[in-house]
Length: 309
Image (cartoon, rainbow, N blue to C red):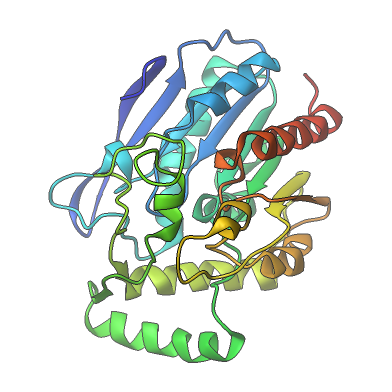
């Protein structure tokens, strides 16, 4: 575990695989009586961003993170890693985390979601039990649409529904290219240390049931999203799917399609701001130093306008 943070197990209701936990993470530099941030990670991901906590502390915020069920430190031996059947399953641990933060601090709360965490956070602010306790939503390259052609997606939806209804754990291995994780890990092309058991270079299997849950969540947002809180959506200036490691990999979103974020993002709520980050990677806060500093600065300028510190 990363130093300077307290990790606490959150016991949750048993699900279709048995025992379930999530993991609550609190910075030891939290002081209370100031705005706070709750960070939600993406798919094949967990919290390994102490520099993000440091940035928020330097700007007058307390910092918390949540590792969802079947991710990171919340993975139990009997579970299928990163698996879910409905994205609403994660609302239980979000309820817990928000209640915990609010019991310690009644100042404004920022919900910050990356990629799939951005999708889940957006759904929570539409339907979650304690959504009114969140002051603003910040999205870092949110997973608002599957990165395939629209014609392929029309075929993919009924296929995933049919297969997953017959075989709940039907999966495809090797669906996610290793180029992105290798572009950020210090042992390959990147500068970041992370646990290769929790975030393997080769990824985890993509389950049809999970894919169906993702598309259902995305469809809900496209048709029904009505988030009342101010929203900031940060995204790269460019996206593409590489066949090998090259310079552009370090300067683009190679996981998701930026055009989808620009199209769907403004429909999430009544007050949405989109900011483009030149040369940003998929996780903008793991981009090269100058780029991530630009992303962090733009985020803080927006927060200064929308959060009462």
